[in-house]
Image 1 (cartoon, rainbow, N blue to C red):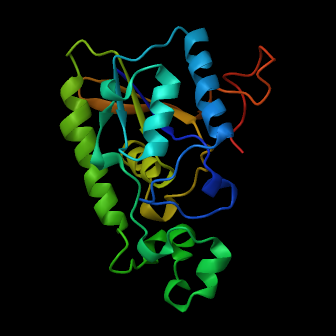
Image 2: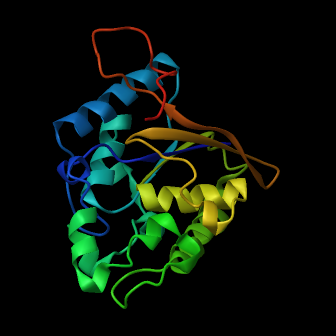
Length: 221
């Protein structure tokens, strides 16, 4: 069974480096185009999905719909793949977080995950790793030998890294070792109860929609 894990398309907050978390932002026009072009890339590859999971946040659900052509009712919304909750830090740029005495150490979330201490209103790495592990073990593993061949999972930048950490075995200190652009695809194969990462960082869209090349080779910035 093949599982494709991706990040939602671009939002306006992405363009301003604002931390989104659980804030229910929506795709901007570029984000919609990224997802729509990814759908074309899938079609060119002869790839369709038997089951589609999404974070319940709007930007993820809309991405899932645009990537697959499925209706919202056909998409399975799962809280285990929602983004981190960042509490007071949400909606703030790196400069704004640095200027806030309560958030001055938040940079450790990205720079030094092992020493990140979340505030009371912010979710911990342990919490996200626990729920994403449950998603793999309790949800996805149960689909093997069910006739489901291809699964799409649409999530967020932070949560996607947690999902991948369970597969590639990286340590927490290397949580952010791979930067993932919006709508980046990562393919995991499940066989005989074991997950294996087949590829990571693939982009199925292109900026120039008039060109027929580049759906599968555009590097992740």
